[in-house]
Image (tube, rainbow, N blue to C red; front, side):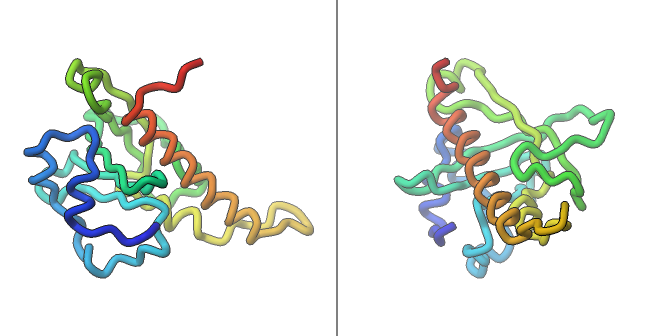
Amino acid sequence: MLPVSEDKVRASFVNASLRERQNVTLPDGFASLAWDKLDYLGWRDRKIPDLGYVVIDLGSGPVGILVRQGKGRMRTRPQCSWCEDVLLPNDVVFYSVKRSGTAGRNGDTVGTLACANFECSANVRKRPSVAYIGFDVEAARRHRIESLQQHVRNFVRDVRDGPAPS
């Protein structure tokens, strides 16, 4: 991901009110983030623990969404829909997201299962285990990174534009 300024991050949120954008609490160490190791910028709000933020570049600049952690408990350990890591070292939670525009103002939401603290970029960069003789570990790692980027882009587009026509 390319570096993004604080002002651009605040302005990028498509499903947040002006007040919510102004009150965004940026992640600790924002000025020194390792942007080259991030596929998207995701963090939890320090002041409001159930609130999180996700920002990704969709080609025309950064697009951000405000996410809220669901209140219920999972009966089984879920898999992250974004990084799809089967050996997760972290928790996965359900996030509910208000759609942008009129749909969101009318209460339309969409949800996803994602790593609780948005550790996906680190998860997909871990060296996968060798599945069989001749398995290309680097190609598998690159594929996981590309898949993560695509999953997050699709989710953010869905929040911003609504469901794709079928």
